[in-house]
Length: 110
Length: 114
Image (spheres, one colour):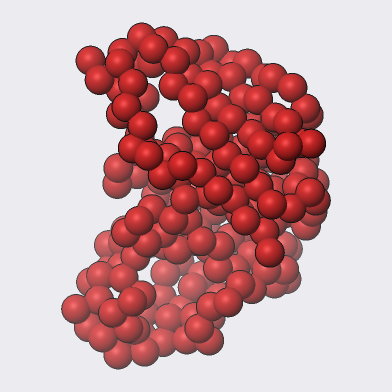
């Protein structure tokens, strides 16, 4: 069974702080890992993806992947109120199968 | 121009009715998906098609039937609608590959069963 787990939150951080979002997955056949942001009433939008161990940075966002621990995280530096949303972790398996976590709700307090 | 478009955006109907949701993508992707998102925001895969062939069919009641006339379209027909079918249904598409190549989502269809 392919499971993707996230803390549901809600996670609250003050403006300007670092928000840390975590995701674990159960199947070692996982190939790529994605972070999506979803505002209330909107569709998921891609923030970034990672498929090699280590860190990948894109602006204020850093994705970290540790395949040995089956763990992927997303760090948001200098958090802004506009970052308040639900963050979805998605894991891609061979054959283009995507499985999503339950999402973490983030609130950035001005 | 919209990359993944779904119609209708809202669907309000009575229990027991049959309804369809249409999805089209103009990204040149070869794989399309249907997801159901419940009130707790969990995004659950229902079906996946690659070049019109079904490749994923999760545990979904057989009242739900996907149809892919070509690789740019994936429609979802639902028979005998039930209260538990109320949710947001998202269509998505991607290139078929083993790494990278994220999914692109439509705006969702909000289905409410009365």
